[in-house]
Image 1: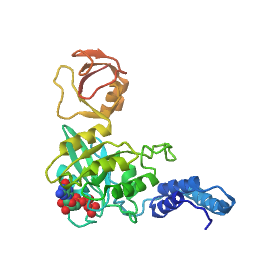
Image 2: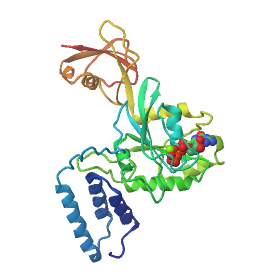
Image 3: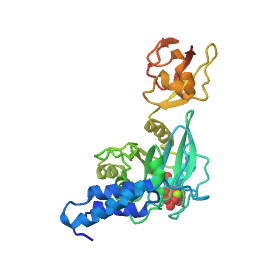
Image 4: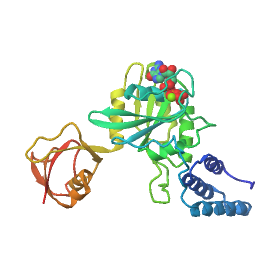
Length: 327
Ligand SMILES: Nc1nc2c(ncn2[C@@H]2O[C@H](COP(=O)(O)OP(=O)(O)OP(=O)(O)O)[C@@H](O)[C@H]2O)c(=O)[nH]1
Ligand SMILES: [Mg+2]
């Protein structure tokens, strides 16, 4: 073992050991190489890691092994997926239980949750998927759990306000940063296909009914990131409406109601699109072939007069009603 290996290196090495997929192993090896101190003593190790890396990159894509199911891969459904992270007993399952119909295990002992479980939250008329997860600790995280976070849109960091907030913060950030899962890291981390690895994150501060005095201020002071934060109690229901609204706003979505010409709009089932989407994006979301035939649209909503004709590149706003006209 060469001297002068840094804590960053050992973190990346641990990531490598715990990785359960080839993609994740490649990311970890690249991280090990990038943080390795540059001196003669590390030449051997560097060559060894490079060999491992090229072997992994050349390996044919892993074949699906029989009936193997990755329990940490939660297929996405709804308008977006939020995955929770937190230390044991922080209240993750209680949140999922309070906001969804999912059958999760709420218990007064730690490690009650052993696998991710999705549930569906409804914010106004938008279904949003919320994923309960097993706890993480400084020493242990279920191998494969990183996959749950890779696959989600936004990470909710659950902090118990009645316990040591700095310790919980340290454990969560250590894990998320060492796996390049946080969007605020200095370098924009991407995988080999150019997809961003980092996710938006925010704080869900639980047990506000029995919070230590000044716990939220302490959390803010201990954290170098300016994450959005909401205080909640699943006991009293405080903050839960705000939490659902925050899911929607952090997903960065807009709702658009489609209106067939001459008929009222279907106001019960909006299309959800990324903020900044235009009329053409809506047409593509309805049907790819339709998009090519789009002539113009009429719109009722923000910044336009009722029924105004707009072009394909008109930027849409949340809750706009659109009538598409095709050639
Ligand atoms: N007073 C109070 N207790 C809560 C609140 N939320 C959760 N609890 C209690 O905290 C304990 C742990 O809750 P869980 O939701 O099971 O915690 P968890 O984070 O899922 O725990 P693990 O599955 O071990 O990771 C239970 O006894 C809950 O009843 C809250 O808002 N206020
Ligand atoms: Mg749980």
